[in-house]
Amino acid sequence: MKKLISLSILSLLVSIGFTQNDTIEKIFYHEDSSVSSKGKMINGKPIGYWKTFYPNGILKSEGNRENFELSGEWKFYRQNGDLIKEITYRDGKKNGPTHIYDDSCKLLKTEVYKNDVLHGNTKTFYTDNGELKTVTPYKNGLKDGVAYEFAGDDQRILTLTTYDHDFIKKQEKINRRNKLGKQGVWREFYPADSSLKREIRYKNDIYHGYYKEYDREGKLVVALLYIDGILQENPEELTSLEIRKTYFENGSVKSEVSYNYLGEKEGASKFFNKKGEIEEVNIYSKGAMLAKGKLNKKGERIDYWEFYYESEKLRAKGEYKDGLKIGVWNYYHENGKLEQQGKYVKGENPHGDWTWYYSNGEVWREESFWKGKEDGMATEYSDTNSVISKGEYIDGKKDGFWFYELGDHREEGRYIEGLKNGEWIYYYPNKKINFKGSYINGEPDGKHSYFYLNGKIKREEFYELGREEGTWRTYDEEGNLMLTSEWEGGNEVRLDKKKVK
Image 1: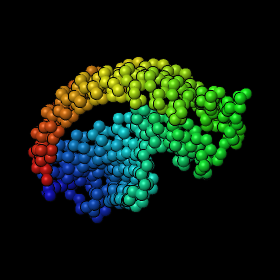
Image 2: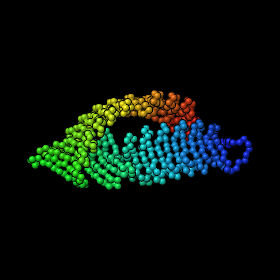
Image 3: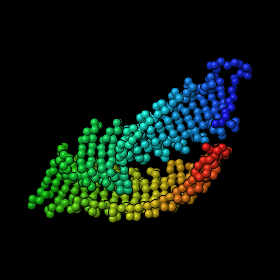
């Protein structure tokens, strides 16, 4: 342990005998005579506002003490001066919120403590957009209750994990989608108390399984069964619907239409020719038509189909073959403007050029596919029509030169089979370099340099195939060396020439 040398600063240059209740200013020093901490003391105990420092003079921590104990908000900093934590104390123990930041000073996590023990919701955040990522409840230091994982784009719930004294009792993955649309269980919740409002099962963006709705008291009020988007007539486990039929002159059935107890069309309405073959199927929900098209003898969708929003405005149109989408499909926003357009080939695989649009009609994304995999140029635009990313896919993987415009940040470099390779450069809005470094198969390699907005070097790092190596240096905005560290085989071995134990 380093020996600390204390220096008492007297307010008067006279000899005075201190009583036990005198308050004095104290400064403590590292072995190299740099200030390690400073603040007030009474009777040899710290009181009031205190600061601690790294040997290079960078502030390490600051906060207040009441009754000689840590009190209120304390801030802790990295060796380069960036904020890393904010911790709230009472009576020397963590009590209240703690905020944790990543190395870009973006909020990474919040925690709540009660007498040094986690108690309350711990939250993590996506650092690229600041949106909520997870919420995990703690009780007396243990995970207890339902934890949530959220999507970074629209904040829908992705995972529900139920804990009981740190043990996982149940985990459900919900609200998932892939290139073919919504898949599996999707749930909506009432905003006031997060109770379940609606549960729907999807396959390739169409209803497949049970559709359920609940009131605020948790009572099931609607229960329907769909198979491949077709509402099943009178399943045994659900209340039957009234089926009304019409007939041709020869006595054969002309139509079958289902109605719910309110007299609204519900489920599949079928229309037949005189041979008894289904000519058309209309799908309804509470009187609103959601889809119409044809079925083959196996009950699979064939030929031309249209899908509608609950407002009965066109949502999508295209053709099916043996139950799978084929050919050109168009998808629409509810305002009637085109949302997405592209072609499917055998197996319902996207193929050729696909285009996505914003609701104002501007192009959002352009991609090319080959039998279900991205293949060719891909371009994404902002809602003001500026290009925010562009590059090429080969067999489903990014390849060649790519660039991204993320708000006030630009990145550019090359991929080989989906992994970063070669030199990558990040830029500030003024076109000056923010970062420059190389990668091999996605791993950092060689010299990585970070720069201040004024163009001066901020930090130098060195890697060998992903492992930290050599001498790392950190500078202030004037170009003065502030910190050095030595790395060997991915381990930090020296900090400012002092051995790291």
